[in-house]
Length: 201
Image 1 (tube, rainbow, N blue to C red):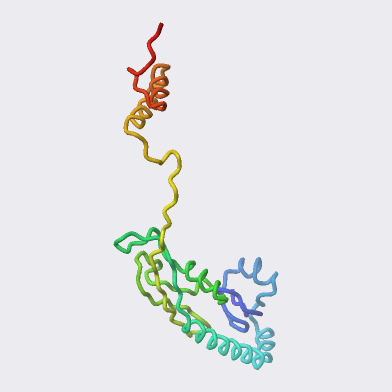
Image 2 (cartoon, rainbow, N blue to C red; image 1 turned 60 degrees about the vertical axis):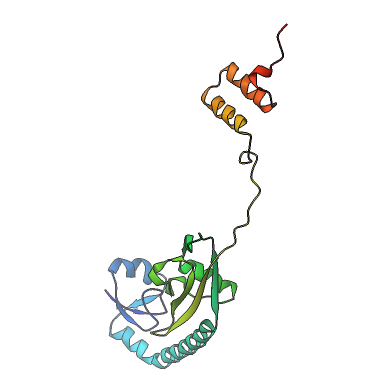
């Protein structure tokens, strides 16, 4: 079904564009929201009268795109990710990572228009990221992927070093929960060997 767009529709087109779409998409989505009109001689004539207005809006978009391109290309985006000694990341840098960093700088672009090399980056280094702007315009961003410093956290009680005997007794209790095993574990926690038990009267 052929329609003419009454306003910009993401992933479809701009105001005044003529598009072929599925009839259900037009009836259930585009028409009820006034996003589009059925394309015919009448609607074509209406949009021809609005041609000057449409061209003016497109000129404004081109100007905004040009300004955004300059702003983006003046920026350097730095992303810090935990990495191994060989530079391999424990994770990956994606277009969402770049989008988040740009947002911190006050730059809001469509995340889907950010193109990261290979769709994801898995090593530290310097990269070039493409941001698709209005029409065929695009900006090239300098991206620096760094290894993040991982702060050593204090070990929990379960992870703290223990005497070898205590670790051995603990493993034994995990395998054997009999009263005798529990007594051995208790003695081990007190620093006593089984032979150190007080003599029974």
